[in-house]
Image (cartoon, rainbow over all chains, first blue to last red; front, side):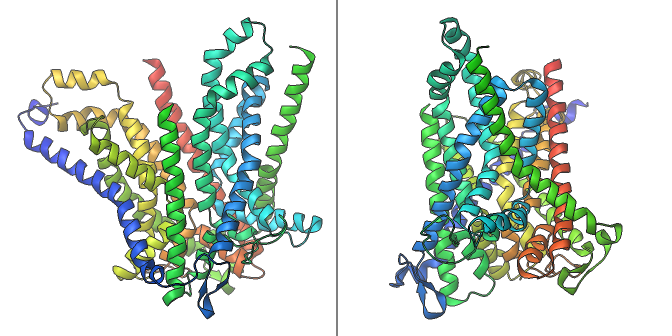
Length: 285
Length: 278
C-alpha cells in the first residue's frame, strides 16, 4: 500500500466521496416523494370530479368508479390472513424454541426460510391448481375471500415466525430462568411473562405484514375470483384493489386509468400509514 | 417435564406439522407436474402456440436482462446511499431521521404501486414504451430500500476500531473506504445484493405494466419481454391448456429462487463464522 493513495493529503477525494454518497442517499430517499407526486398528478383530474369514488359500484364503461367494495375485499382478505397467520406463527415459534428437539427444529426453521423465498406467483399457481379446486369441493365456487386469506397467510407466516422467534428468544434469555426458579411452570412463564414482554416488539411487525398483505397482487388475483362485490360469506369471490389494477391496467384509458391511479394512491397511503404506525410504536419501546 | 407440558409440546408439534402441509403440497405439485414437461429443449426453445408448446428460452434471457439492468442500477446507487447512512451522516441529525423515514416508507410501498409509477415515468414520460429497460429501472426503485438496508448493516458490522486505527494513521476517508471498509464488508454487501436479486426475480405485478408480455427473443433493451414470473401468470390465467408449461416454468423459477436463497445463507454463514473466530 503506497502512502500516496491513502494519505489524508487528498481531501478532494474525500469531499467527492461525501457529496457523491449524499447524492445517492437523496436520490433514493426522494423516490418516495416522486412516487407520491406522480400518482397524485395522474389521479388528480378524477379526484376533482364527483366520481362517486366511495360507492360500491365499479362500472368503468359507464363512468362509475366506486372503490368501496374492492377496498373492503382488500381489508377483509388481509385481516383474515392475519387472523390465521399471527396465532399460528406465534405457536409455531414457541414450539421451535421450547418444545421441539434440535433435530426437528433446525430443518423446520430452514423450511420456514425456504417458504419465504417462494415467489408470490408460485403461491398463486398452487392456489389456483390445488387450493381452489379443494375448496370448490367443499363450498363452490372455491375462488373466494377464504382462498385469498389462506394464500396470504402462507405468504406472511415465515416472516412472522422469524420475528416472533427472535423476540421470544431475547425475552426467554432475560426472564425464563428467574421465573422458573420461582417455581412457575414453563407454560405459565410463556403465557404470563414471555408473550407480554415481547408483544411491544411483535406488534410493529404484525402491522408491517398487514401492509404486505394489503399490497400483494399476484397470488390474490389468481385465487380470489375477481368479482367486484361485498362478500356475504367467506366463500364468495371478491376482487381486491391490487388485483383490479393489475387486471385492468392493460386496456384502461382516460377516467378509467385515472381511477386505477386513485386506487394506487389509496393503497400507497394505507401502506404508509401502517408503516408510520409501526415505526412510532416500535420507537416507543 | 410434567405430563401436561408433554401434551402441550405434542399439540404444538401437531400444529407445526399442519402448517407445513400447505408448503409441502406446493413443492410436491410444482415438482411433480413441472418435472413431467421439463427438458433441456424446454429451457432453450422459443415458446409456441402462446406458450402451450415449445420452451422458455427467450423468457429466461429477458429475465436475465431485466435483472442485469436492475442490479447494475441498484448497486452503485444503493452502495452510495448506504455509505452515506453508515459513515457520513451524524446519527442524531435531522437529515438522518428524514432519510430513515423516507427509506422505510419506500420499503413499505406495494409493488403494484411501483408498477403504476414505472408505467407513468419510464413507459409514458420517458417514451421507452413497454421495454426491458423500463422494467429494470422500476425494479431497481423497488429493491433499493432492501439493498440499502442490507448494505448499511454490512458496513456497520465492520468493527469501529478499524475506523479509529485508520484515523490514527491519518489515512484518508477514501483510502479507508477502498482498502479497509469495502473489503471487510464485501461478503455482507454480496449477501444483500443476492437477497435483493431474489426479490426482483420473484416480482410479477411491476413487470406487467413496464416490461410487457412479448415472448420473442429480445434484440435490445428497448424491446418488450416477459419474465419467468409473468409467463407463469399468463399461462395459468389467460391461456387454456397452459397448465403443464406453467408448472414447468414455475419449477424453473422456484429452483432459481431457492438457489438464490441458499447462496444468501452461505454468504451469511461465512461472514458470521469469520466474526466468531475473531
